[in-house]
Length: 94
Image 1 (cartoon, one colour):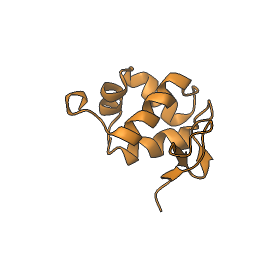
Image 2 (cartoon, rainbow, N blue to C red):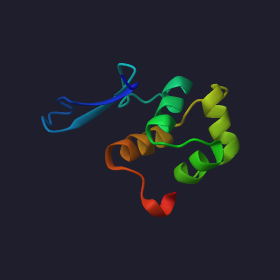
Image 3 (cartoon, rainbow, N blue to C red):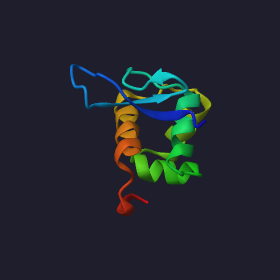
Image 4 (tube, rainbow, N blue to C red):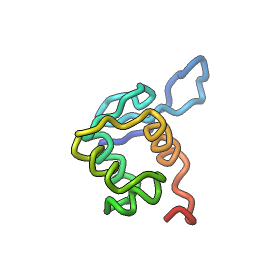
């Protein structure tokens, strides 16, 4: 089973909302671990730090820091990843 799963659940009273989880952890939380970040990149088909930086609009060095856990993944990056998992990566971002 992939570490990412999209489950139907009730979120803020919306019975039709999708909750994105990774390794059983709700990504609506404000934090994302290095393991979750790496799994998210794999789920999106991103295979290099350079590609991850381009898609997420951040530096390659930041991607490396998140992958190795030397820096926390900011909430804004986590939110973007959740949206990309749910809706896909626009072709012009690749």
